[in-house]
Length: 216
Image 1 (cartoon, rainbow, N blue to C red):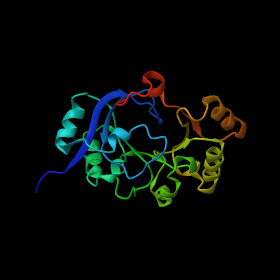
Image 2 (image 1 turned 180 degrees about the vertical axis):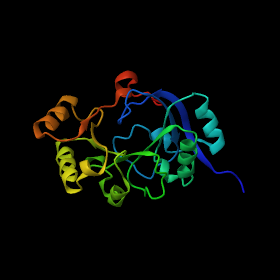
Image 3 (image 1 turned 60 degrees about the horizontal axis):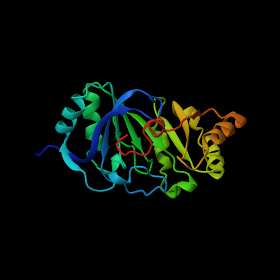
């Protein structure tokens, strides 16, 4: 039987720009393809193309950086079925592995060692109807839920979902992130403080450091 493979847009070493491990040196494994078209997407270059690599080839490339942290991202990595095998292969090599996912595809069967960073798409993302709310039950205290906030309307919607699904009790962290260039950082920070929300404000560190360059 042939070895599993996935289509890869890029593998690179940089600083994690988001989530609980922000600022930590991390290898990013960016899989090709995504069924969503969020209006703020900054990785459209990963929708098509890429290079097919075996899981062993990917792990060898990751190992060459001698990392502690590995982030599997996209596109939407779960759109390729062997992604779950890749996640397990990376965990087996004792990396601290995270998965960045849109929340539109099932998390069923993901290796329990993986830290899942799952979006809940807001109305102004253009893809709110793609949220698979059944995924919330598959998250635990090491996982994170992220809202990308594009407007005050999005903020109010996210605040409602925070309460509706008792998200703070289900995951380790809830992240509110301003959509780059659409919501002022200070505005979102002030809204969170005024409402005393139990969430972490975050912004994309890599955008501050490197702007809109792909691969960061």
